[in-house]
Length: 183
Image (cartoon, rainbow, N blue to C red; front, side, top):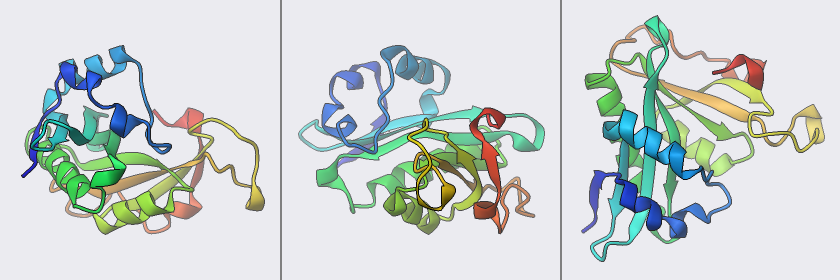
């Protein structure tokens, strides 16, 4: 049986099997250490009985007033461990901590628009598209339909402090903003 535990600095020496996936953003060591120092309760690892990392999530709390929220910065599961609900369990934990400890209004994340599998997974977790962010992941040039494939969807899920669901909108796919206008 696997275990969900806190992400530690030593895990950075063990996550190559996960970070080599084409959809996974890899950051510098200081980036990971900053998250672990500032939001340790929003960073966790799913570990197999043999000690191999199966997946991890990095999150933070940010914003102000009704925009105070939890943010999923990175969520990834090694290919051999996918479709075991590991991502769902890690996201649920981050949502719980964002709701109960940080008292956020919602949790958000950015996902590549062309990563249909991930978009569908997040929708299955209760997230919806709040807006499309142009060239969030950098520009590869305009593709078919006039939209860059490296655009991101800003997806959100309201928490208990947002019972009227003001942090989400029904027409989010139609709202397009520039990368410079988001924090």
